[in-house]
Amino acid sequence: MNICVFLSAADLDERYTRPAREFAKLIGKGGHTLVWGGSNVGLMKVVADGVEEAGGRLVGVSVEFLANKTRPGADEMVIAPDLAERKKLLLEKADAVVIMVGGTGTLDEATEILELKKHGRTHKPVVLLNTAGFYDGLREQFRRMEDEGFLPRPLADLVFFAEEPVGAMAYLEEQTGTR
Image 1 (cartoon, rainbow, N blue to C red):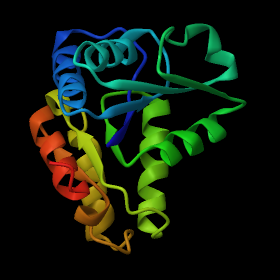
Image 2: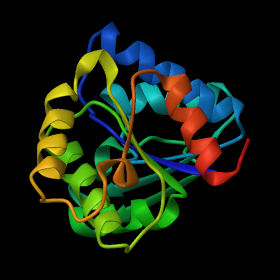
Image 3: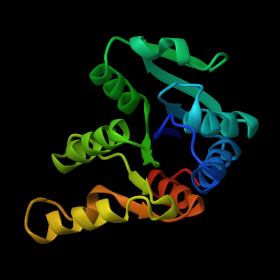
Image 4: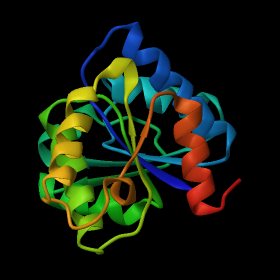
């Protein structure tokens, strides 16, 4: 399975890096491929390191203005001209999507895939890994959108919230039949 992970490139503390490392090991040990933003810094590096150490493949999709931060030695690295093309390529290469902790870029990527699912433009499973309760507020906002009629499909059809890496991987494998 090609698993696209949207996440931060920031250097973060252990409460965020530990679960990210755990999920990365599950990707690698499961024989899966990480599809990610290609950066070799911060949390992106933590996940790429974990996948590589556990025997998984690395497929990066960076963008021209960040090309100097790409990971050397990735199995595949594509440089997109802009962020919109980067998102498009990341999603094209993925069988499933996991959203980890991140800032505005991660939120942009998350809402893009959910919007595509909402309109039936993709059926790929999407997991939001709610590490340390990071996305509690977003989950509440999504529930409000659902309750007040802003979502034409049930929230559960769009995204699965996982509190731990093992639950995220179990959901993806079940949804894609890759157990």
